[in-house]
Amino acid sequence: MAALGWLTPRRRSATARSVLAGEASAEAARKTALAEAPPFEAQPEEEDEAEFPVAGDDLAAAFFDLDNTVMQGAAIFHFGRGLYKREFFRRRELARFAWQQAWFRLAGVEDPEHMQDARDSALSIVKGHKVSELTAIGEEIYDEYMAERIWPGTRALAQAHLDAGQKVWLVTAAPVETATIIARRLGLTGALGTVAESVGGIYTGRLVGEPLHGPAKAEAVRALAAAEGLDLERCAAYSDSHNDIPMLSLVGHPYAINPDTKLRKHARAHDWRLRDYRTGRKAVKVGVPAAAGVGALAGGAAAAIALHRRRR
Image 1 (cartoon, one colour):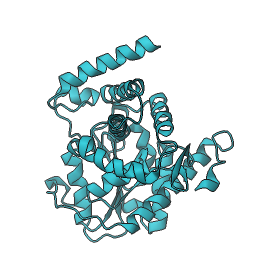
Image 2: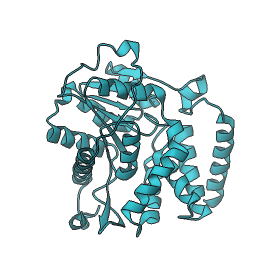
Image 3: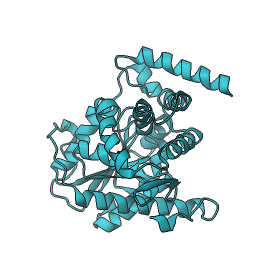
Image 4: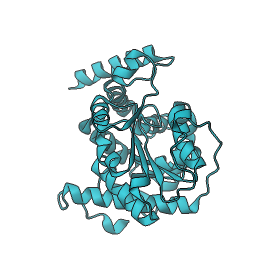
């Protein structure tokens, strides 16, 4: 991994970096999946999904986006909360994480500027730490902040593929270590995620390629499918974001889950299946889970936005 450190944005095109990020993520995902045999608990299938997936079709697999598709909110924010609790960084940096999460959940979209800010924050925080240390902490953070935020409906869709004997992968811009923990806890096959460079088991504060976002996700799925001998026309992909249209367009069975406005429009135009597990009119419009505590979330978001404006 260290030998790839010279591949910086100035020396490679965006397309080349997307391919590199995708291939690195696919390689990391396959290594992790081969090393683990995760158990899982059966979940009921949705009745209208009886005809798909096809049981016994080992040339098919399913690829699930994570943030707002499988889990409410952004994994990187929840991870940041856990690191703050363990005094990895200061209150000012937590406020920045809060602002990014408030924007993500209220707007219901992935803003490139906020995503890059979150990435840079995370890389600066983990630089110099052991990979094994952050992985162990990630297990604790999953229990503290993420487990209760899994969408049961999406979880049931993933289970339907597992029950059909197919592999199921998370595909996310979150760090591959965090994504792998979530995949294992859910009983999935593995995860494709952003690969942070490490040397001797220590994070350098750089990435291999770029974040696994947009076109890079499609490249990761393509690379993994080739390595696993999958037929993409028989595979399924699930996402909430229009940024994942390249990944969704790769497979024969694309699904829009809790879709943002652009993805909903695109899905309807291309006759893709839609599922929305959010409840309440406001939740459908802006992408906020209609559960206990929405009022508190709105108040916190307003405070975060006010803080952001003052700092600007």
